[in-house]
Amino acid sequence: MSPLSHTLCKPRIEKLTFTNFTLLSERELLTVLEWRNRPGIREHMTHAGVITPEEHLSFCKTLPEREDLLYLRIDVNGIPSGVSSSRFDFKHRIIEPGVYYVAFPYAAAKVGMVLSYVYEAYGMREVRSAVKKDNVQALLFNALKTGSAVLGENGDYVLLGTEVPLPYKSRLNLHPLHIEFHGVKRLGDPCILNFPLKETA
Image (cartoon, rainbow, N blue to C red; front, side, top):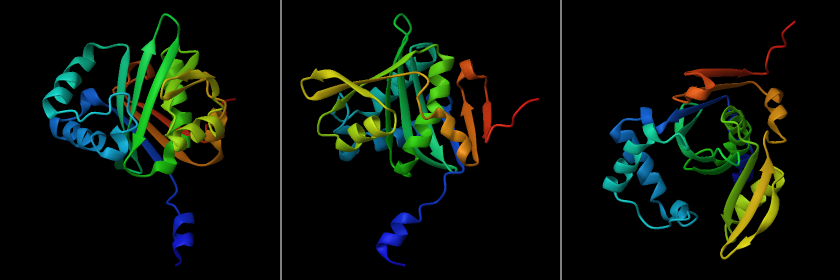
């Protein structure tokens, strides 16, 4: 098999699992920290420095009391693959998301569609994000996949925004997909969705 054909034959995304950090063990949280501290990931963060285990675990202990923050580990086809972070501004109904992957990066579009359910459950009406200007992949993804519009610039960042629900949410019905949310109380715990959705009479 040629390198090109291998690239094109990506495993189909059949299952996405989202697990609240509050349900993860200390060992699992430290694995997430190792991902986050990788140079290729942290260089795109607002805070690009290395986070210590003590800082990380101390922060994670505050999450059960933080209604405005939701951190989820993303598993793709049963393999821990990335992290979704959400900061909710309930007054203005704005969600500020963040996401990164250590495996299955091409799951980003489906993950974005699925997270729209979370944003709606939290009563959000707009997604806003600040993306570093040199993060071309994220800028292209937001422009082409989520329909984000440029709201302005701030130093090294491009400010983007789009309405909730995200415009591509209906595309989830195109292929079979099993979704599980664990520890997201506003969705029901656990929340299990299977696509295509069955029509009710």
